[in-house]
Amino acid sequence: MYFIINLLGVVVFLAIGVLLSKKRKEIQWRCVGALLLLNVFIAWFLTTFPIGRDIVSGAAAGFVWLVSVAYDGIAFAFPDWVHVEQMNFFTSALLPILLVVPLFDILTYIGILPFVIRWIGKALAFITRTPKFESFFAIEMMFLGNTEALAVSTLQLKRMKADRNLTLAMMSMSCVTAALIGVYTKMMPAEFILTAVPLNCINALIVSNLLHPVRVSEKEDVIATLDDNGAERQPFFSFLGNSILGAGRLVLIICANVIAFVALAALIDKLLVLIHPSVTLENILGCIMFPFAWLLGLDAGEAFQLAQYMGTKLITNEFVVMLNVKDIMADFSVHMQGVLTVFITSFANFSTVGMIIGCFKGIVDEDKNDLISRNVGYMLLSGILVSLLSAGIAGLFIW
Image (tube, rainbow, N blue to C red; front, side):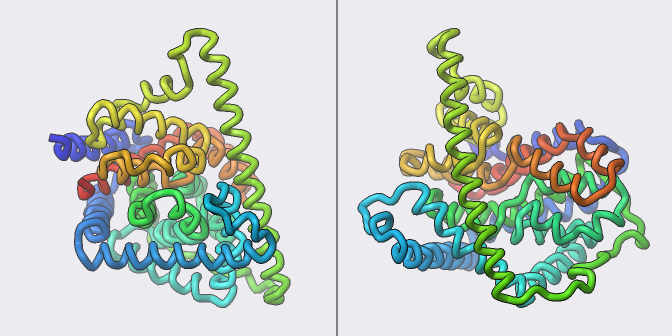
């Protein structure tokens, strides 16, 4: 029965995308169908097929090992932070970023990561018939994150028409930076984290095709540049120093956001209980998100818990939810663990909207930026639908 509800949920989430589409008659159903079949195959392969499970387990072990290596560097500076029975969130989850982000930047500097992104993007465009740059961008986000992917695509964004810029803004709501995967796997089931990453990538293309279909002519379907426009290459150690400083800023930004959002949520709760003891932010969000959580194939009790976590994630960020559930995940059913983990593994929240708009404001002209700013609701809707679709598709194979 719950499988049927889960399957119905996937259909409902797709139907919402069609119902709220800006140009319903222009939806490219062949493209959407190919992407959907590809995502179902990926979910089945990574969660059910033995080789797929081995790939996910190997990748998870690799990220866990990488984080453990980061602890060696942390222990050199702060041995009393690492050699303890229970490391705090800042040490266990955030400080490893100081190794992981520079490592991915090094892979970018020497050309390995751009090579991988380029060819996976070309393969995706060939299989699904999606525009070349949109396919490339989806893969690029999976490795680099939203603002980083936008930053390295500056020339392309300037040359593209405004409608395609909006498509990329909507897609940017659904990414997750590969450099943070190791951090996530310290708090949530690694196999579900790693399953969510490619599902989000494909679903971002599906949802943008449904909500905001854009016809791209053969003349427009080109990638303008993937380099630095002929700029002189930055010396390696200068580049590495900037990368490490950037990683340090990222650690502080995440820490500051988590503290601020948790504190603000607590403040809102304290104000709400003045109205009535049962009126809390979690309960309000739970009521709003409950129908969608139930459609992921859960009983009423777990669906309401999931709905609360879903709402919290959208208002704050994924780290807040991970902190709340990491010690109680074992109490949930396997299906609940899977759909919860997949849903929260993305940057889809209110603060991401501001980051994306700010990034576009520094890149494209005023007309393009105004179009994106007028469609904030569609950007947020895109992020929510992608997370729901990813959780729903993965949930079909996690029981």
